Length: 387
Image 1 (cartoon, rainbow, N blue to C red):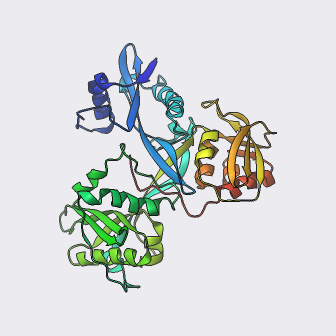
Image 2 (cartoon, rainbow, N blue to C red):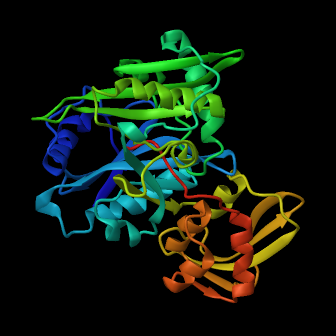
């Protein structure tokens, strides 16, 4: 089997594979795009599998950690069972490391395939169905903020507004160009901005979904971003204007506080959840790139069990010193961490007690507790982007 980075010459073969795997008739004009690269696996001189890697960043502790977003994994049905997908993932690990991506995220339809290579569930992607009579009851906004439609001149301010909120929520993507084309947002049905003295105080993006039978249709709200309480209340109040036209709105969760602390959702409501999986590709580089809570000086000795990423396997020492956290080789290996444990620990999705019960961590609980102190997780890691 030969694995290499794909080129434009692979467009026809890759399109056929993805049509078979995802029932997608759309044929892109190009295969290679800025901010994205990928791999193909060849058997007997023919393309047998493909994998795409997008260039993203994810916020942890306020710092954007470079992340390889894996998607579009497809294997020819005639060559399944010959280790094509596993070989692509192995090559993807070294490729992402070479591209300076110390963590990787994917949305898995077959979780066990990725668990065997060290990915594990590490955060949520959620939509919530909000009945119109529960969008906003109290408190009402006390400061009316006039909104207007967005235009091309708002694109930089839109991203700045998003980043001001996103960097405070672990797991959120930084929507970095060129992987994310900022201008695409203007193609949506509704892009409403609330200006402020120094840019934007907030914005709302949404698509009107068609109605079916007696259903009045849906408004899918992709982003509801406000930098302060009055802005968020105004954005929620603006959704009330759809009462009588819609029975409910579907709200993608960006800032969980919007709904949990300001909305008046009933005790039971519909939530549509996807879980994303994260893999630490290069532990020293990932730790160096992440933001950490400032703690008293501490250290924990680890033994990393990771046959697919030998560059960080073995004994490693995590050291917090003078507000900086680093990983250095050596130590006693007092706490053993399997590759699958690294992702949920890094994001704060699971603590060391849960990892121990899952068989992914062994060692002295007192030593392992240092890992929980370091992660300092507050809330569930989230992404508001799907790829």
